[in-house]
Image (cartoon, helix red, strand yellow):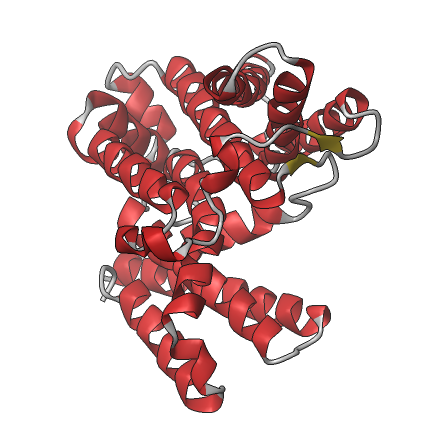
Length: 314
């Protein structure tokens, strides 16, 4: 049930919307749109999954996405490099932000919630400062094709390149969690940090690494966000971190640490995209969408706590 629950939930959400909504929901074009929306939440959820598995949290994801989108636009607009340079700079900006968060958490021994909440404001301010509190235009490059709607002559790829990029990153992250020493250490720290320390795990170093990786993935998410908007926007992705955390929790990740999977988080990201897309198609106001997502998060956390209570009882 733990593994099949997220897939079952996705199936229920999809069937519900197919039955109650117009036929347009089940079209190929709509599914492509949902895939494009999933790419942004899903890419950020990869890093968040690792952080939550290690018993942490990162509230600065949305701000890092905004900063990365501005960095991409500034580099392209200023002629300081091509698309590859812009992507590398965005990933570096995100990784540096994550490095600062991880260092503050481990050196100052401050709760991740507090540190990343501060970084949320700090990074958002940096993005607005770099962009001079306005959108940054950039010349058209192949980066805008990452999440653009597929033209007729490229329908054979099924989904835009950004979605395939998410698939590759998901496979790589799943491999790290399942088959590497770093992945084992993340689960050990999330399950019981003191026991992991006694077993020889370099807890502080692992935490810094995982926050840096999460920041880098958020930076790549910023590249996808830039592709979707074709501009660098310091005000974009406000509240994205909530969707990302919700995706991980819906996918079976535990906010107490020690549990989570990439497959589950990807399913959770799909559920979030279905909800957003379908709510918009049906003309539901924004507050209804927020209430619905809030209810889903609470239910997912309640189910997680109930499952842990059952396990402790056994």
